[in-house]
Length: 142
Image (cartoon, rainbow, N blue to C red; front, side, top):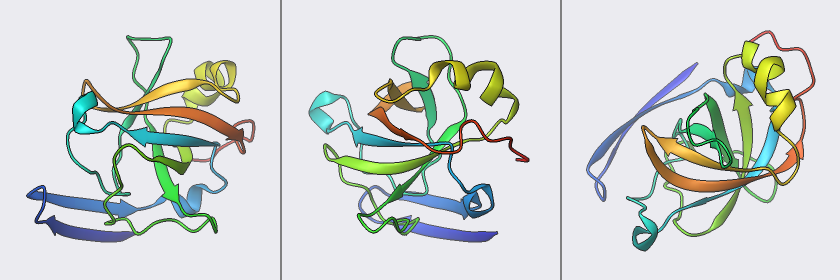
């Protein structure tokens, strides 16, 4: 596992990130995600290493550990310390962290075009749309 610590001068945030998802490939699904700009309640740019949580748009109560890995047009992961732009739709590989929730919840709810929010604590920081199902129906050893 690689560990990276970065100081972001713009936001004055120390970013501690790990890169562990490679062993989880393939991802469970892909999505398009847009971080909210300041005028929509956004805060500041986040790094690709962010481990935001996931809330279905039609479920305002439950939050799940489904983490994004943003990638470029070639399918390569963006650097984990790269700050992601606000108000731009980005492609992300999505990983369900708790395998028991795959069958119990997510296989029943995740479909193409399902809308969701990325959460930072109890705050919505981004909106997303499921764009492609990949490994959601594969058994996981995570």
